[in-house]
Image 1: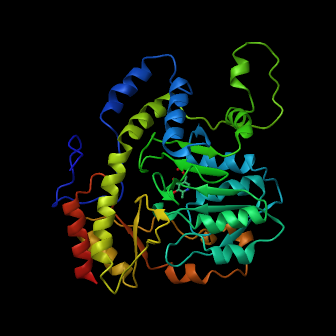
Image 2: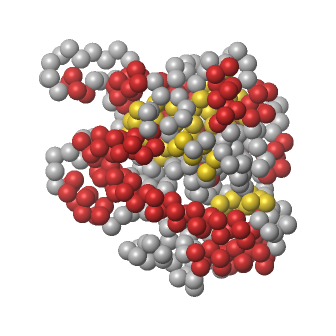
Image 3: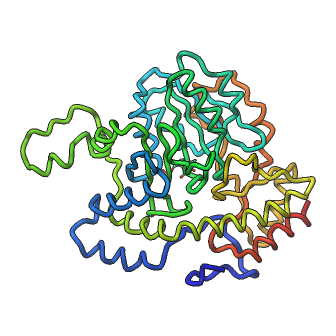
Length: 380
Ligand SMILES: Cc1ncc(COP(=O)(O)O)c(C=O)c1O
C-alpha cells in the first residue's frame, strides 16, 4: 500500500463514498502562499497550467479556472454559442454541464444514455443532430470515456465543436491519447472530491491556440491582465467576461496533487478492479464498464446496476458503508422543463432506479474493497 502518510479506514470503521485527497506537502505550501504577495491568480496558476498541459493537455492549451462549471461555461462562450442556438447534451450528468445553457439562452436537446456505460448514447445523438445543432457535449460518466471516435465523426461531419465534460475522467485515455488532448474543448474539475483537488477549481483544454488570449480575457472580466500591468488606459473591454480564475492558493494544492496523481490513479484502479472482478460474476448485478481496448477508465466512480439497488443500499448503510446515485437525470429538474416536454428516454427510464455508486478513493484499502464486494454478493 503506497499511501503510508494517510491512514486508511479500518475494516471496522464506516466507509464514506468520497474523501478529498490532500498531499502532505500542501500544508506547508499553503502556508507559504499565504505569507506571500500572490494569493489570488498569480505565478502558481501559470505553473499549474504548464504542468497539467504536459500531463494531459499535450498539444492543447490549458486554462485554469475557479471551478469545472466555470470551465464549461467558458468553453460554451468560446465555442461561439449564442441565445437561440441548439446543442445536444447529456441527460444524465451533473447539472453543472447544462446549467450554463440556461444563462446563455441556448436550447438543449437531451440525448439518452447508452445502457452499458451510462454515457451519452451515440445512437441518440444521431437521431437528434441536425443543421441547427451548434455543438455536442458529452460527459465521461464515472471516468469511462464516451465513444469519442463516433462523436468526433459527427463533430467533423456537421462542422461543430465537440465539448467533453471530463470532470470524472482525469487520467482516462482514448485510443491511447489522454483525455484532455483530444477534442476542441475538454473540461476538468478539481472540486473537493475529484481525483485531485484545489478545494474548488477547474481546467479547460482548448484545441484552437488562437482562442487562448480571448479565453484569458474572458476569465478576467474581459480585461487583458498583461496589458493592464502597463497601467495605461489603452485597455478597453470589448467582450463580456466574468470572473472565472483559479487562485494561487488552490494551484499550490493542485500542483502537489499532480505530483501524486499516478499513485492516486493506481490505487483507485486497484479498488475498481477488485469490485469489477468480484461483482461481474454476480448475475443480479451489472457493472457499468466497457473494455473494448480503446479506452482506459479513470476509476472515479464504480457503479452497479441492480433491480435490488434499494436493498443493497440499505444493507450497506447498516454496515456504515455509504453509497449514492451521485447524479440524477436532468429532465427531472424544473429548470429544464422547457426542453423535455413529450420527450422519451427509454434507457434512462430503465436505469433510473437501479444504479448505485460505491466507494472508490485513496482511503479505501484493497482489503476493504474485497469486504464491500463480498458483502454485496451476499446481499443479492
Ligand atoms: C460531470 C460533472 N460536470 C461538471 C461538474 C462541475 O464541476 P465543479 O464542481 O468543479 O464546478 C461536476 C462536479 O463537480 C461533475 O461531476
